[in-house]
Length: 366
Ligand code: DAH
Image 1 (spheres, rainbow, N blue to C red):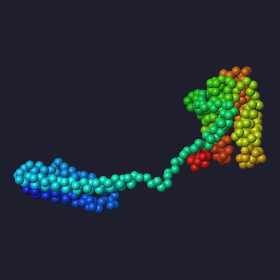
Image 2 (cartoon, rainbow, N blue to C red; image 1 turned 90 degrees about the horizontal axis):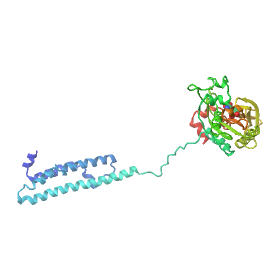
Image 3 (cartoon, rainbow, N blue to C red; image 1 turned 30 degrees about the vertical axis):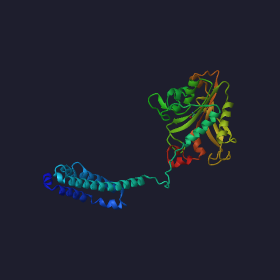
Image 4 (cartoon, protein in one colour; image 1 turned 60 degrees about the vertical axis):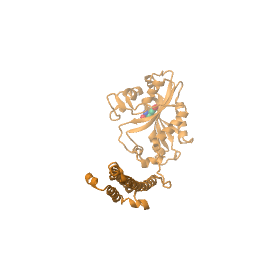
């Protein structure tokens, strides 16, 4: 082919180069005049790529017009100037044609891209779904606030315990039913998931000594079959107050104040004799129903009273086990169910609702 070209008349070669370009340029030519009107962006981008290929084919180092340039030196001197001019004009014409279309295409592409990326400020926004606290957490915080304002520290402690903290130190003797594997989750030998937050009484007294005033909210675990009023994991808050001269009157006053703040000043308390290994004497605490005020309704199961939890004067054995002088110090303690109270307040028929993580249920506590 090169030979064939070489044999051709140089003027014809320039003509041929021009023709070849025009053939390929034909499809781009309309854009010089009319622009790109409604061409989809993808197609315009493809066209721009094709155009740059055409440019390198027809103006690059190996193009026909470049070959023609090399011929300038070889034509007879009399024809050289005219030939040189022809080559240059042809080259300039090709370059101009390419430039014009390239400009149309690239500004069109730019406009379409900006259009595609621009934001429609009139579109409705997407609402962020903010989370919120779990009802048990809300309840726990309300309880904490009350006791903190009464001068109590809030303790957080371990959920896996040794027999010493879960039983021995709490005066729960060998053979007590609470130690039965039917009632307690044992892990490795000698360790169990705590079955009550009372374990924190011992840790707190060991850490802080006496006097001490603290509450300890947290999870506890028992081998209960789930039903509307039971769950194998639930929440308690433990309370402990140890000082010189603490009596049952302090216990009663403190819990009375607590229910006044939680349910209103008209709320009454009632203490029923009971038994817990770690207190002596022990009492079960009830408060008058926040719904009916004691007349009897569905919430209090028509009895007018609702159980708050257990309480009592800390057993001297417990003080001693935690290294506190039981001659010098006395104290009271109590344990309340957080989720139980929560279920009552919100009138839930099934305590398990609190643990199922069903957003449709939880969303109501925003
Ligand atoms: N730990 C007891 C329970 O789980 C509740 C309790 C009763 C805690 C009396 C106390 C207490 O601190 O003095 O049933």
